[in-house]
Structures are given as C-alpha cells and as structure tokens.
Image 1 (cartoon, rainbow, N blue to C red):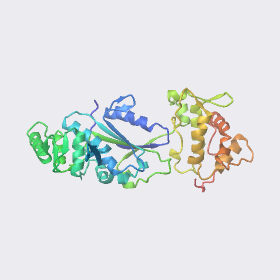
Image 2: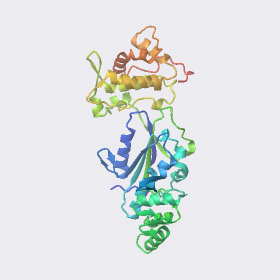
Image 3: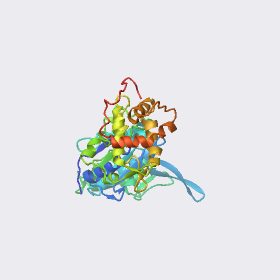
Image 4: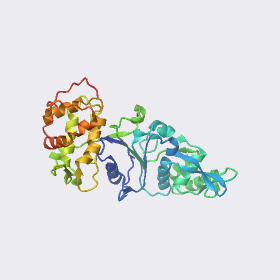
Length: 382
C-alpha cells in the first residue's frame, strides 16, 4: 500500500479523446495505491458535472420517501460528503488508505456555485489538511456520519441520534475515549473534534482529480481564484513525434480505416495528420491546444473504422467545432492540397464530399503539412 502524505488536487485538461480518464486511473494506482477492478477504481467516488448539477447534489439533500400512508424525509449525502465520509472512516479506523474524488467535465457545471463554501477547503496546508474549516448544518453532519458508517436517525421529536445515542453525547463520549487511548495525534481525535463543532476539513488521505475539455464552447467560466487552488496538467494530443518515438497505443496502431473503394488507411496516421492540419491554423484558431483530437476521439465498435463513422464524428467536429466561424480556411486547403477548383462550402454536405480525399491526404502527408505551406491571416479570429 502506498502511503502518500501529500494529497493530489489536480485538473487534467486537453483535447477530446486523449485519455484523461485513463490517466486518472494510472495516477490513482501509481501515486495513491488505489487499485482498480476492471474499469472500476476502489476507494473512489466519481461524479460528472453538468448544467443542472447543484450544491445539493454535491453535498447532500433531504428527499421525501413513502412510508405506508405517510411521507418521511431522508437525508442523502452527496458525492463530496460520500468521499469525505470514506476518508474520515479510514482515519478513524487507522486503515492507512487513500481515497479519491473524481470530477469529470468540471467546467460543464457552475463549479463556483456547486462547491459553495467547500471552495475554502481547497486550500491545503503542508500536512495535507485544509487550511480552513467550514461549518456544516446538523443535517449535513447527519449525512456525513452516515457516510462514515455510523447508524443515524432523526426521532419524532427531531432529536439526532448516532449509534442510538443523542448526537452530542455520542461525540463527547467518543472524544473522552480517544483522549485516553493511543489514538491521540493519530487522526481520529482531529476528526471527532471537528465534527463535535459541526465543522469539516478535507483530510490528507482524500485527493481530488478533475478533468475539463475546453474545446466545448458551451461551458462555465472558471475564475482565477478557483483555478489557483489546483495544479494543472496538460494531456497532449497525438503528433509526429509519437510516430517517430513509437508512442502509439497498440489497439490504435492495428486499427485500419476502410474506405468506400475497398482500400484502407492506418487510422493512427490520419489522427496525426488531422492534428498537424489543425496546428497549421494556430494563428487563427483559439485554444489550439485542445482543438486537436486524441487517439480515442472515435471509439471503434469492432476491429476497423469506416469512412462513414468518420463522417459522423470527425468531419462534423472540424466543421462545427474547429472551423466554426470561417469555412474559407477549409475551402482553401481543399483547393491547394487536393487540387480542386472553385471549392464552395455553403453547407456541411458540401464539405462531406471531400471526406475520403482529405483522409488520404492527411494519412500520406503527416510530415508535409507545415505552417509555411498555407498563408493564414493572423488578424482573423475563429
């Protein structure tokens, strides 16, 4: 088991399909000692942010449930409280394990509103604990005790009970026991002291890793105060150097792309060719670092890809996501490189006509596409 004193608090960003989720699994195993069973990581809570995701989903919410002819309310801990409870339980029982909260598509939700006061906890001290604590409600405390594994309930007279004891009595009696035992300064006292005051901190055995994909324009803005509380890691897109240094995933290396004339291309060469083509227009395309495509941008259903699958995903991405505001760059490239005359791209269907010709060019000319081969007006903004 890996014992890591310094927790990870990181955002992975990069082009779509570059394997950010796969990299999280590698970090979890190699740096945190968290094992995976197939595609499922142990000791991990995973959530995907989206525009309808709220603070209540993240922390917890009180929901009605039917109980015979009556309705009762139950508090359900959110993803953050679940992860925090797992980490606290490990400290209380001295398990010596690390835990992980994974947030996919961090900027597709309103992160500032979702985190709310939890935002303060992202500042960590050298010992891995949050620099500050935040107050939580009695109901949130109840949900946290639930996540830790204690039996909790709210009686008819609205008294909160934990392990069949009133909340205050439960905490005080446990604190007394811990101060008299070997647990002092081992983490358990710190946790119960915090909870006795209805306060929480993020402990050193809880890491948080998030991903963002800013190639999607319909996202929420992350302000600088939020950004500086994370370390950032760019996941690079495939390039010529990956072919030169043979850094190609085995499954992608063997994957053919079948064309309508019964010929086939190496899909990995097409991927690199597309990225070189996109980088050619770096002076005109905003955020070029994440407009490229990764090895897994298209996930094949079988042992080969077809040009129809490429039309459905890649060509539309280029048309609608990369060259959104000016299709003249596409038209000029087709005229210059494919020797076509008077190319007019009035509709997406006009662009699809050139799919296989473009794929052949990208496949065969991955080293020939340089920024000097096509004149670009740097004043144009796309």
